[in-house]
Amino acid sequence: QQQVKQSPQSLIVQKGGISIINCAYENTAFDYFPWYQQFPGKGPALLIAIRPDVSEKKEGRFTISFNKSAKQFSLHIMDSQPGDSATYFCAAAGVQGGSEKLVFGKGTKLTVNP
Amino acid sequence: EPEVTQTPSHQVTQMGQEVILRCVPISNHLYFYWYRQILGQKVEFLVSFYNNEISEKSEIFDDQFSVERPDGSNFTLKIRSTKLEDSAMYFCASSGPQGSGETQYFGPGTRLLVL
Image (cartoon, rainbow over all chains, first blue to last red; front, side, top):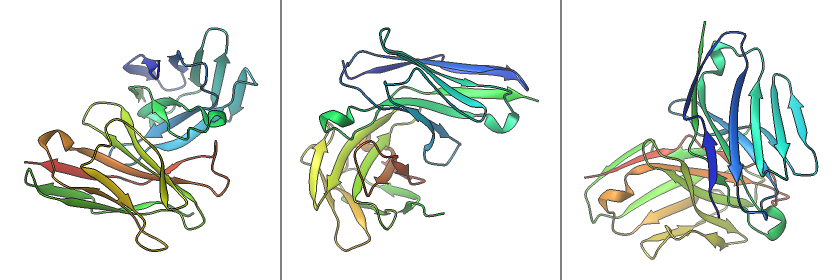
């Protein structure tokens, strides 16, 4: 019940295309859903995060869509650029329940071809 | 921009040896974390630390592991007797000062190899 399932494992997109990564969870106590971006040799860096009181959050080219009833959330990267090539992790935490720990998905390796 | 730093970047040790991984969290943060990432796998939570005590730990964080904040700036993870399966990238993270639900900032990691 603590798992976060992420798909696809890898994704290849052409420059200017839309990249979509999906995540699903089971634990209804989760109430904080961040996406992290990781470049080789670096630590994960927060990209964008959402709480379940909204269904969508947009920051620049990055959008999170959240479906509370389906317990799913997704990351959309519009106008994908070669510089977006990285591994993306979704995560979840039950912060209102007092848990700070992030439960991560397995990651999606995104390659944006020029 | 403030960042979390970790030393060493790489550590090679023999099975059964003790290792200490060091982290300097962002200076005004109050919440500290250790995560690990076995090669090719997902990032896994190990432990969270607040107000000089462990606030939460995972089943991975057994008696071989300990954390400490020996002074006002460092946060350390000690593995008492390393095993082959401890080989992983270890990430320190910090958040705060509000804590709950705030962004966790990750360091660049320490790659630990146990031979």
